[in-house]
Image (cartoon, rainbow, N blue to C red):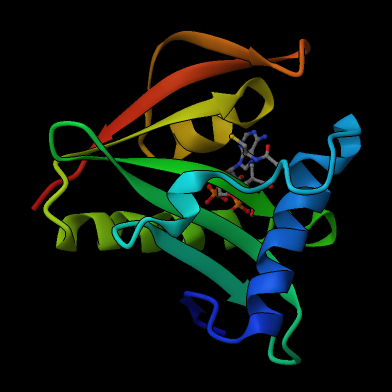
Length: 147
Ligand SMILES: CC(C)(COP(=O)(O)OP(=O)(O)OC[C@H]1O[C@@H](n2cnc3c(N)ncnc32)[C@H](O)[C@@H]1OP(=O)(O)O)[C@@H](O)C(=O)NCCC(=O)NCCS
């Protein structure tokens, strides 16, 4: 099924739940830690991948960054669905949205384990960045958006 923004309250709930389950719960982070103020920014693009029966299996968001750039955050595919191309679909969807918004580059802070995934999709490793929850090293990666 196609990727699109969540529409209904139930889809929004499933969107944030998947974010929480993949990116926060395994590190015992509190409920609500999966949300950021940028989620509410009208310029932010939310991407949700549903199965035909309506199960949320992939999520990601693109927020606006300085100097006509976009920043991808909260990229998460349900564990049982990882390795089936959904991460690629989500990222390509956000890149296309970024082009339409006039962004020239996308940047992101990749968890160490996800660096090879982003590299496969054309992202260049720029520098180490922060360490999340005291244990997950991140790396700044960027990709120029061609016309
Ligand atoms: C990282 C993540 C988003 C990737 O999504 P995915 O659906 O599993 O990845 P895809 O199946 O779309 O993979 C796309 C390509 O990247 C490659 N790839 C994916 N993960 C990889 C890895 N860890 N190492 C090397 N290559 C990898 C795939 O082989 C595929 O290449 P191909 O097109 O040549 O076959 C997903 O695994 C995930 O949610 N992980 C846990 C949460 C996380 O780390 N999120 C990122 C936070 S920065």
